[in-house]
Structures are given as structure tokens and as C-alpha cells.
Image 1 (cartoon, rainbow, N blue to C red):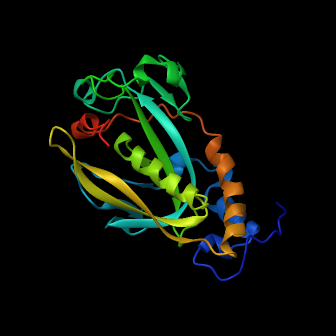
Image 2: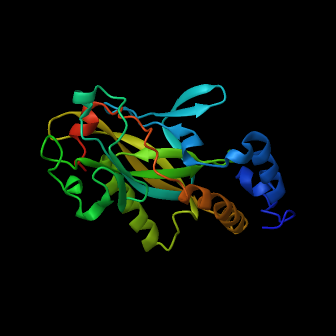
Image 3: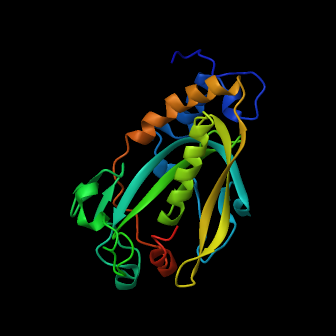
Length: 250
């Protein structure tokens, strides 16, 4: 992209559509410097435990509780993380023994191809029902009023819902990044009667003809930085017991 290239200045609900490329670059250089962009630096929207139906959303004024979050899903990544010790055994705070940034190849112990790893088979967890290697999905959600996306870490219990939503978009010929999606939470009980929070997705509207090229330019600039990341072995084990119990419940 040249320094003077325009992202888009047509009327749009999205802040990124009102910026020139050099404006975005100047903001990044001023606030971030040479460190660059990483998903570990992005604000994370937290999903509650115990069946809560409000997201915890970080803002400049502090955290707020929101029933729904709307934005464009600019990117997603399938990830895996494995701890040999359970939350009960370690007390939390331990770093993973093995992790995969693409859900395909693990780094660490045991490492290797995830689909062939015994830790990824159902029934390999301590309760004999879930996967010992936790499968998750990272969603990068760009709300209209922000220049950087939020990260939403989806637990295994929400993966089937997201897959179904993606297929529905496909059937309507809508790219997942070509519309505004709304994320909400519903309270669900697993087979042991323990409540957990599951994500629901719906389409708010398709992007306009003016927004589509601007969003493509934005994604072309942001996604390479997110794809180039390495596994973060500083990620602590902090999940609570009810999250572990319901891993395979959909």
C-alpha cells in the first residue's frame, strides 16, 4: 500500500472506513512503535463462567458488562492448549506443556501433528469425556467505533455453534467478514446439571458496497501480523472446574 492510499471516506458506520492508510500507520507508530501488532496485545472480551449471560468488555473507562457485542469478524484462528496437570492439581497459573497456534501442529510436549495426538481424542481428559488438549477458537471482532479488534476466546462448548453459523452464512453466499455479526450468550446446563455460558451468533446486516473494499484493505493490513504469531507459552491455566467438565457438551 502506498502512503497516500485511501482506505475509504464514504459514509460508513465503521471508524476504519474513515481513515487514510497513512493515518492508521501514524497512529500505530505513535502508540505502538516498532513492537508491532499481536493478538496478545489486543483487548479481550471475557466469557463468564457459571452460565452468565453478559460479556465483560474492556474500555478506557474500565470494564463494562454487555449483553451483546456487534462487529465484523475480520479473522479467526483455531488453537489448542494442553496442560498435563489439571486445574485442581496445579491450582492454576501454570504454563501449558503443549500448544498449537493453528490447531494443526503442536509445539512443546508432546508436540507434533494434533490430529494424530492421543491428547486430542475424546475421552482423553481426566473425566473420560472431553479432550485432554483443549480445542478453542479465537475470534477477532471489529466493532464499528474501534480501530483495533477485540479478541474473543471461544471455549469448546461454543465451537459447534460457530461452525453452524459459518455454514448458514455460506449457504447465503455471505463471507464471514462481509457482514456485521452479533455475539450473545445463553445459559446452558451440561449433563451433570452444571451451568455454563454458550455463545450465540446472528447476522445484523451485510456490509455496504462502500464498506466492503475498505474492510478488505483493513484486513489485508492486519491479518498478516495476526497470522505470524508464535505460540505464547506464558498463557496461564486459569479455567474453573465447571469449564473443564462441560468441554464436550454442545
